Amino acid sequence: ESLPLEPTIDSLQIAAPPPTMLYGFVVDSMVIIEGKIKRNQNLSDILSSYNVSPEVIHELAKKSQKVFDVRKIGIHKKYTLICQPDSFNTAKCLVYEPNPLEYIVFDLNDTLQVYRTLRKVDTLERTMGGYITKSLYQDMVDKGASPQLVNDLVDVFGWQVDFFRVQKGDKFKLIYEETQVEGEFVGLGKIIGGYFEHFGSEYYAINYDQGKGHDFFDLEGNSLRKAFLRAPIEYSRISSRYSGRRYHPVLKRHVAHLGTDYAAPRGTPIRAVGDGTISEAAYGKYNGNFVKIKHNGTYSTQYLHMHKITRGIRPGVRVKKGQIIGYVGRTGLANGSHVCYRFWKNGKQVDALKVYIPPSQPIEEQNKFDFNYLKENIKTQLDHIPISPKTPKLLATSR
Image (cartoon, rainbow, N blue to C red; front, side, top):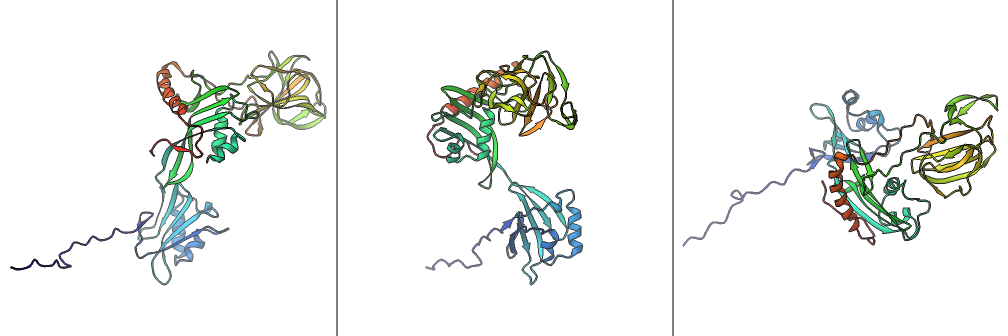
């Protein structure tokens, strides 16, 4: 009886290993060189060191004009060279990474090409909840939040919560998006929903787009943003507008006037144009009696030359839109009874009459069913977020 033959090498099917890929190129047997852009280094400096002629570099720069401005190569940004294994390490490809989301390919193979490639971005939904034990900033950062996420949460509840008076025992919860590339964090997406308990009052925020961009609404469908009054006093006239160069009636020379003057009789009530917290209430040599209000992380307003400041108006006090904060006068450097109304956006003084403030509109009738369905889902998720976890919890898979 004959024994079965042993299989020969020729009769075995040996699977070839898959090629090694990098940035879409097969790099088996190639030389890979990685580096970071040095100060004053440019495309020509890099490629000329790897046997690429000035003519080819010039042609690459021309081809890149509609893709990437090579003059904007940034210091410390990563680049990768794919080179032939010859004595010169001749470059066949240069990949420049301006940010984690994309890379620019300078292809030096048979046909010179320059193109941009976007990496696959995964969006994850995460949750976080906690008590205030030190400060909102410190407690959120301790749980793994970025400073930007803290700022975003403050902006969401900036009209409802006095963050100057946040106290131990206040609670916060939020559902938010995080973007990742190849498993690495690259940025924040939008806040989907939020909750804050402050002095025993509960506030919910539901992110919803009515077709005009994302906005935040409470459980009744009212916008969390509060509209401003157009002017700080009623039935007045504008006596002087915002200007970079105005003849000052007291100084008798041209100076910048970074406010809007409303002329009115002495004693006319001055109203806060929006909800906020008093940041200053004092007397100044030039401003006279004045009050400054921080409305949220974006807007602040100031009211100058008051005859007097309303009793109880002092730093740290919360005021409501329309609340009387003082009375028209002519204290400080003023030529007549008026209030000089000043407006800040993102820390910069702007013309109050020209600044655009998005209107605060409630959920429209045709959107109420859709909003209520979304609201119930988000509220249920927020209510079930535990307060104690140290790190953000992954809520959903990537999408």
